Image (cartoon, rainbow, N blue to C red; front, side, top):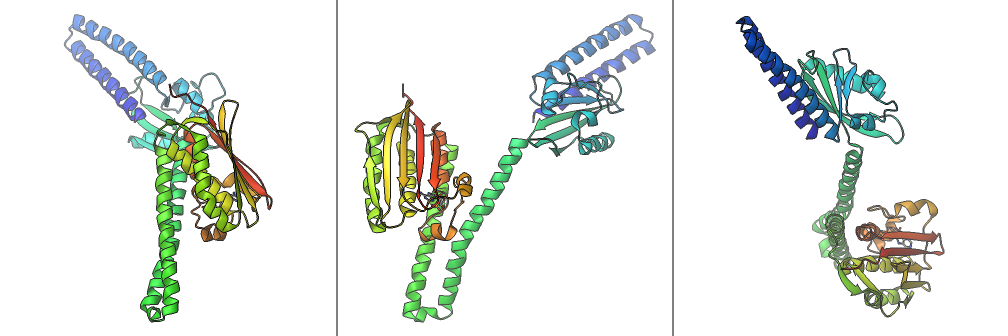
Length: 391
Ligand code: ADP
């Protein structure tokens, strides 16, 4: 960690200073004036070197660095510290820590850490909008820069880290909930069969069907989780291909699903629509959108798939005359596991991951996905991708 490295270097510099001071005292004691002068020069050179190194180190660091005197006044602060603390004035030097941070919690932490003498760190929720989280690490130097005891406070903005950690925690909780539901159902059915239902042919048949359905559901969730993780963590394996053919293929393969649902499926594509992208991932995007459009459209409704170019971009649009999405749900439908109607999604085999897969893939290709929808009238999902040349 950068602040640990900086603190170690500071401590090393201070130790070197102490050794030279000791050398100077020994020389004076033995009344060796010329050696004392030499040590004096060395000490002055060391102090200049020390200041220079400290300044260069702290200015080159992205972490904020604040040095406090024993009374709690700031005697050194790098530019990053001012930025991280959103300090409105020109210079932090001369201000008290509480004035610079507006955090009594941080002030108390620094005082306690300084008196313990042990390096320690803590995260602080800062007030203000947007609210931020700062990680403060305290190291005591005795003696410090001025020859007096000092406290070095290293500050790092960990707001993004905290946000990602919250997403990760929520995701793990959601995954475990999504996996537990079908597992609980399988277990309950197996128990009932074990307790005697196995001998009732009709009941046993329907129970076994449910077990198969729930096991398939677990399979789909794990498959979608893998696709999502690949889309998030790997660079798309791009290649040049005619995306018009891909769109036509996906529509052709969806015909059976549309027929079974009584939905009319139509297609409009030019003969040639070159795209430089991951073909497999684009197929996944189209399959998810067309599948959803059919799934959320009642019999007699229609789904229309289009592909075209507009302003140097390839556009895929999938429109349906289905159930639509209410205004308040629109911003959330791309979240993992978010479903407007859980029961309906479950019934149609949904995992709640389809649209987040679409969003991740499209964004990994530097594109964007939009949705226009009117409740009870239908929805249009529009994917727009930049036409990137492969050479
Ligand atoms: P699911 O597996 O539930 O379909 P998705 O991530 O694909 O999950 O979609 C999230 C939710 O967005 C769906 O549960 C549904 O409520 C809504 N949704 C997606 N596509 C459509 C659509 N074409 N029409 C209406 N609602 C849709």
